[in-house]
Amino acid sequence: MPGYKTHMLVGLLCGAVVLFVASIIFPGKTSGSLVHGLGLGLSPFVAIISDIDIRTSIAFKVWASTFAVAAISFFVTLILASKGAIAFQFSTIHYVIAAFVSVIFLLSIFLKHRGIMHSYGMAALTSLPWSYYSPWLTLYAFIGYSSHIFIDKYWPD
Image 1 (cartoon, rainbow, N blue to C red):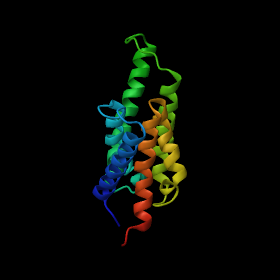
Image 2 (cartoon, rainbow, N blue to C red; image 1 turned 45 degrees about the horizontal axis):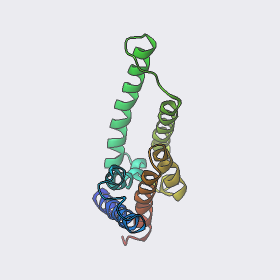
Image 3 (cartoon, rainbow, N blue to C red; image 1 turned 135 degrees about the horizontal axis):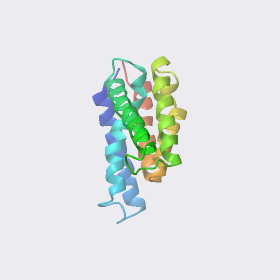
Image 4 (tube, helix red, strand yellow; image 1 turned 90 degrees about the vertical axis):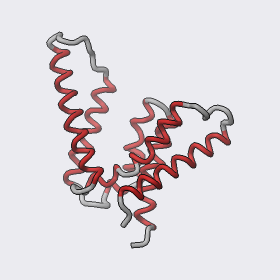
């Protein structure tokens, strides 16, 4: 079974293929583009998300730590903003993203490995929030996530 380094490398290579194809289809519009740079950096990290259902995986450890920090930050900001201590107002998208991430985290604790997290439907669902920023980021995320599923299916044990 491939490890997280293999998944990240394949995710990066798949992201590079997306960038290459985009540069052919849209010549001159991808060089120096922040969105494509972010997408290229995003694809290897999204490629390991489906392993959050393994408590000993790097993905789960990073996910759990990030979730804890984000949840604490979210609630502290919410409390401080409601008391008028800081001038910040959450928009609907903030609540939607927080709810989505919370549900995925809670699901990851109870799911069996290579279950729903290793599906193209979850790849699409996980990639969808990136469309808020750019359809390109959605594509990079989907390709990175899908590379993990593909590698797990066809990698010789």
